[in-house]
Image 1 (cartoon, each protein chain N blue to C red):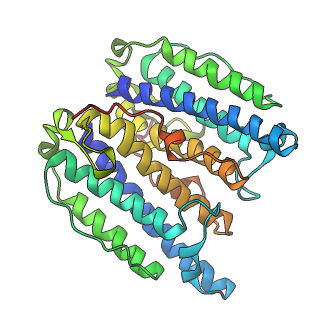
Image 2 (image 1 turned 135 degrees about the horizontal axis):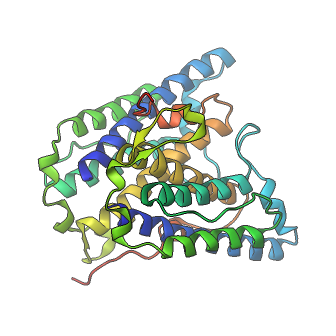
Image 3 (image 1 turned 45 degrees about the vertical axis):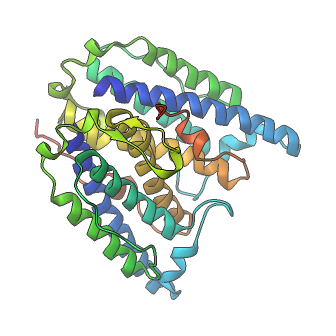
Length: 168
Length: 168
């Protein structure tokens, strides 16, 4: 199911790209600087919008890398505009596009770590379910919530994207 | 992986229960009515807090029911207090506690529908990955964001809960 869930992350990053496009159009209609969005936040001690987007991107990218062993592209976190954020999102979509189901064959039993765990590890399966998936959706939903809180007219369909519905 | 992901949902509903407990204690410290939280929202046309919690609960409950064929407990959406919301959350945790991995053996190939799809269906696998999981985390993260936006001092560890870290 790893490959399918990464496919879903890719799809939702595509939706995020559309929200960013809508945010730019909304700002133009309302005559404010669209790049103000990058600094908006829901609480003074929560990440601002730009960092929510960067972290959603990084969570998907690093999880795919750690669970496959394939190197991830580097991103410098220096985005100053919605367009630069869109480029980051599309770069991660392109990275995720390069995977096949085979790349995740050993995912469940890999040993995953990151600097803040001070030498401790998680199995690939635990890391994916307990850390990567919840964090991806956390930051994606916070990016969405910041846009909605600031007046952007997007809805649940823009969040989920098209569903694989079958005719009766 | 269905069973493992439902286990993660159960764990995160347990975290949600703790946020609700913290929200009640925060209100007492600040001397405001804790049940005001139920009506807070991030945008006038988004669900208020109570409905975010109800929908997170329902998404997990109905997904487990639809993918296993086991009947789900009914909940009336009439909660007026944080305590009643906590009882709802714990009821869904108890329901999820009753499943085993065997219950989801046929999940991927089940046919799932709901009234708003007007007769259309999704496979269990598509429904789980494209609809149930993204929606669960959407409403859970919005509940969290509404609490944070209104001053509650919870953080990422309260969101994720304890991780299955292994000693070096």
